Image (cartoon, rainbow, N blue to C red; front, side):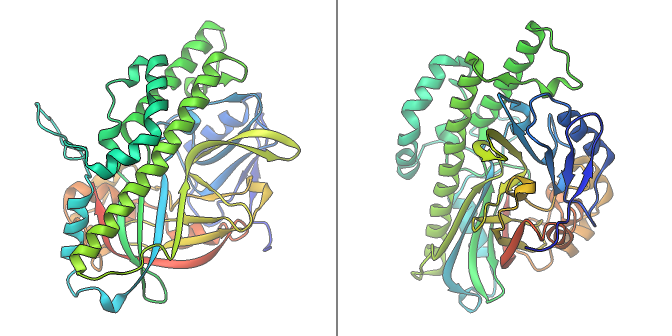
Length: 408
């Protein structure tokens, strides 16, 4: 293993180990991490990945191991958000000169984006008539969802089955990529969509009300927690596990639709799952670290146990990486989930011109309008620097460069 690259901060709580050498690390994110480190149930330390930046409730790019409690806002509202990538038998030479047809085929196959001011009209990012493949994928989720609705009626009218197999907005994407050998990959990024958002929001509020009832005062109300052994803890774990399953199946359904769409567009049969990775990066799991069974919350971080495959995407115009974990216990066997933002969406829209966005994405078949400037490459940290900062966490297996990018 290469030399350890982390640095340590401490301010009244457990240590915070950060893999941030050579990358921006905002002061607000540091303060947010310090607040987390002061919680009384943190196990050993908090880890911060090189894509770390300020988040709602908890820092994005953080790994938070806890004993006897869970912080719903540290998991967030995009429960189970993550990545999937598959390598195909296609090569660059088999792709057409114009990739507009492939992009169009993917956009037709997978609902994406969101309609504003619906006024009774269908949301373009959801299914109107749920197709058979989505209905079939919903079946393993259906019975447990009914149980959750009985316990939490707020979930009844959410976007659930009609969001399964759909992409969403923001930093979610579907890409066609080439690796260093000229082989074609399909890669996508999404999570548990509307129903996961509702589950996360609901339990964040439940935790806050519990803190008020028990007169527990916190430096940030978004750090409200659910103690193990309580009914709300058990209900949250049950709901979050379901949402994580939804997210994983959501990515599987979309990937199958992408494969089918590209197959039809190219008019040729190809192998599509020669290698495959499907990993969460917003989730909580039970793991064993430093002699204890703990709950590990990764918000914008990927598990990277020794030999475990993961995906670290760049931005719309930057490289992405398929990686293999090195099993570094100092990070609780974790790595970054991407490049990490250096500009808020509002700032990016103010600071980056459409011309700059066009130049940054010149070699990618993608959206070129003002509505996607908040996702432009300049809004993110340099992915190469992010990878350099975590050389002791993962090794690079493949380097991917997108040639098609679909965004909502």
